[in-house]
Length: 153
Length: 116
Image (tube, each protein chain N blue to C red):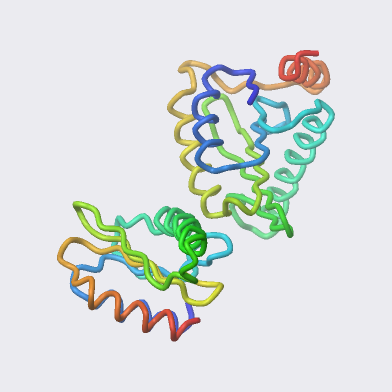
């Protein structure tokens, strides 16, 4: 597990232990990576974060078109793996969790422990930090900086 | 919720001491049907009991005893019981200390047979 924010580490470690997730990515609403577990290549993380954030944005737009409040979570069940994608609100702004799990756990467990992860993150978040806004012109620089920090290159 | 599942769960909640009855998908540990008192964390019980049942099933099979038909977890404050209903469902009951486990077991096995 690698994290850019120290306060994320303990809740995420607990989640990984209890949920048996294979891959986990925590990112901001705009797709900037905050922490990851299981990815070995920066490129994979970058693609997963961008796609995850885009999917959440798309479903938000879909909910709006349908006159609904935003969807709580998305789930895709594959033959061997499932993907769970859920946005959540933090004092620092919106975050998104992307979890890939295998047949040694279940969607119910992932959902259960993800909800606990969100509560623990909210409790662990440093007080006084307002919402961070990433300007479009800074996005690429910030993205590469976070990937360098996560993968050490 | 289908009438069949509703009737099955209502017959469980009529047993003294039962505070919640669940039908759980064995594939993903999600609640399929639920009849529980306020304050019962049905989703959490469903996911955790389903995971435990899967591991206990593997343990029983490793011992060469075939498929388990009933699990009973006894704690100081109450009981959680589970009975597989075919390959797809798990009947789960949460009960306090007053429950008659023998009666509960009979009823759960009957329901497991009817909804399987």
